[in-house]
Amino acid sequence: MKSSSWKRKELFVLVPYAVVFYAIVIRHSLQLSHDHHTKLYGLRPGWIFGRLIDATDAQWRNFRQNLPIRTGVFGIFTLVADILKRSFSLRAKGMSFYWIAISFAYLFYLHEACILFFFGIASANFFLVKIFGRKKYFLYGLWIFNLSFLVCNRIYEGYRFSSFGEHWAYLDDFRGTFRWHICFNFVILRMISFGHDYHWTDQYSSFDDKKHFQRCDHCSTGKTCYLVLQERRVTNDKFSFTMYLCYLVYAPLYIAGPIISFNAFASQLDSPQNIYSSREVAWYGFRWVFCLSLMEFMTQFFYYNAFAISGLWKQLSPMDIFIIGYGVLNFMWLKFFLIWRYFRFWSLINGIVPPENMPRCINNCHSLESFWKNWHASFNKWLVRYVYIPLGGSQKKLLNIWVVFTFVAVWHDLEWKLLSWAWLTCVFFIPEMLIKSAANAFQVANLVGFVIGPAGINWLVSGFLQEGGLLTLGGLLVSFYFGTKLMFHIADAKQIKDKSR
Image (cartoon, rainbow, N blue to C red; front, side, top):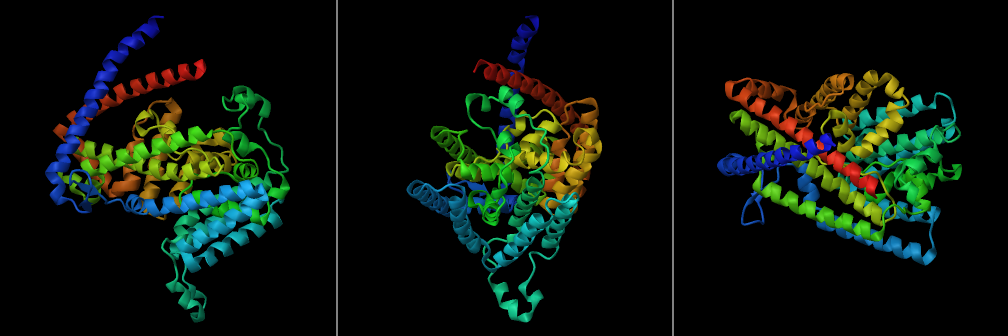
């Protein structure tokens, strides 16, 4: 009782502190953008009160520019799929043919002649799985095959047709609007999932359906959660070439995911999802539109990414550096949040539920482990199922994280700064696993991996070791402490809400 009373009193300190903290961050961000916008490059005319917009992030810029036409295309795909499904009562096989046809048309627009590379590698993987998938050491061959193409695709930049003879050279003029080997990183994850799920079909499963149904909020109400869809084995006839191709090229998830396992995809193609009602899907879309508006506001008032890209942050005070770094991390989170939820929204409309990425806000993760699980959550689920557990799981956790994060870095790109991010993350992960303490160091690792690179870390260290920097660092530690305490209150409130349902 005393503990509960103390917690309520604690909130009277934590909440005002958080309000003041964000008021300072917002005011400082506005001032920085106003004072230095003439020195930044990559700013373009915006639409809010004649302000400039931060368009320095190529990934977000391309997504934003193509949003209207992409929405129109997916709208047509969805309408045709719904008409065919209702008119002809199409189930797994029929819908797989539809999605193959419509998705290959989509792929041809994106990659043109390069879909030959896509089709060749995907077909080779299918025959590898079907011929050797029941063998004891098959998984080694599966990983060697896919990792080889993951690396070669990057080294040779998606290959040139002229390498196979001059009479093929003319096809190099038809490479499409989007580099196929970038999208193929996601396809490789699906090919590995297909191989693993096929290999495990006849093996013993440790998944306890009965115990899960008793504990799961979704399954206890008669719905089926994603975990059951993933762990429940599908029949051998689902591992056909048409279902495999449909899984690889399914248009709503092709470019950016979220990542879904083969078992979960194949089972939902036969029996569309019952987790979300139409009203819930519509609300999901409305929330996405609201977050898009928030992103528009952020990029037209706060030029965080432009500061980071231009290198101007090196000339600023430690407080300014923190504001920009914190802003970049929030920009990155919101960018990926919008991209992943956009594609997941279209998949939900079409009856396929992939895992949610970014289920928790970046500012509500008090530890490195929770941050990682909630950053690219579907990728985390994939890594746990197909890498972490096969390597020994928690019994070899200290060793496994090095393999997992090195693979994550190589999967993203063959860059030294990403390997630095992976190994820094492991370094910061180990103390947390050993002492179970909150680790805010992951934000530094993210900046190294995605923004400033290994060399930029020297600027951060030297900046915060100055007299003013130490004072700023002390204030940040206090803020992180207050923030972590507030996160615990939020977690407790959510627990109480879940129990009352």
